[in-house]
Image (cartoon, rainbow, N blue to C red; front, side):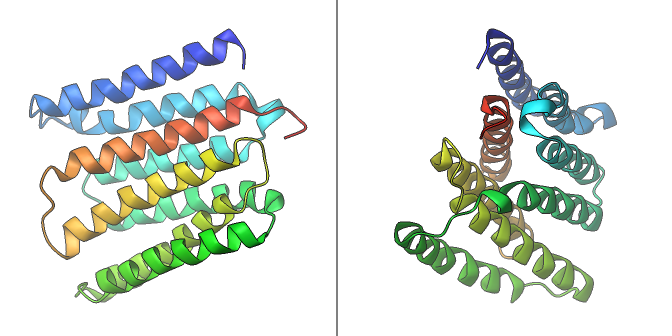
Length: 213
């Protein structure tokens, strides 16, 4: 990875850190709330510069995620879920052609499924709104599928794809658990730290790519 890409990732890290500085000042203005989308929008720009080697799907996934961030900042939960579902569909489309099933990965998938699917069912059992129940159920299946395709990657740095996916799933699980089950202390810190880590890893993995991987 060339020097430019290291600089891009460093800027992303600075913007993600700056988000926590903004919310740490309890800023309630619309501009402050919308800042949540800025790091991801920067990741869109960074990965777009590498589209000839990394393709368009991850930049599009990041763009849909930024739209989800924006919707979340505006309190539009259903739109937030919808945009992130689209983001994960782009991630799935990117990951699926590079999946390879092995015995070792089968064991990892068993552990992954044993952790994620019961948690999804538990959260769904606490949702009273039918619209939100359907939206979260569909989203849960999509993000679970994204996790599966990430775990099955045969690209270089395959372990990092799995780590990024698990960070993303942990972040979204915290959002749902905090909203529908019970309050999580310091929820924003847990949610946003793992979210930005996931998106940063996906951004970095895209920048690492060459046409051959």
